[in-house]
Length: 281
Image (cartoon, rainbow, N blue to C red):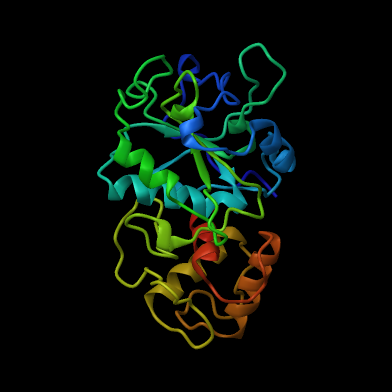
């Protein structure tokens, strides 16, 4: 499979690469979090593994962030929803970057597609008040409130380190524990669809507890049929994007889900929709 994500649309300047040197030095008031060393082990199969089909390309604030680990796509969309709901508007952001931390041999969590930097110029890596940047308490609290189905926090924040890295958020769980409980996401709705340019298109939203499945018709079906055909040029050879969710569509959705490591239900739920949205056209 060829690379299925695009480079960061913001083109990260190297001088703003966050050091992550204090990732193990957490301020106790932020609670116990998964260690960076543990996260490297849990996500080892994703490290710098571009072109393997393990990365997706969700649009965050309307731009590519350079690829994120596929199991975490929904978590990144939840982070965006939480920030937007609390009034945060990002000017720059990036995720994937295969690199080590400073002069060490330890790989940055950006190398695994499980970290994102938000507005580094406005949220600098410096000592002092952790909320002195553009990210304020309400923005950070909304992100840290995002939980998985077992009530565990999905994200941690670099601002919680002894020397605050305000720009930096990183996944705090392994690939089997990043399923988003959308009831914990400020302003979020399970399965909300974001097109690459964040355009609002009538009929393209999958509401909470609703999926596209056998017998569905209309613009949303047509949209995802086109996404399937963009993902694989051989998809839907008989009926193409006809707006009818029939057997051919079901079988190709199953094929896509199997390749993405999802349960092959044949239904387009929120996770499947998010991944299809992220795949390179």
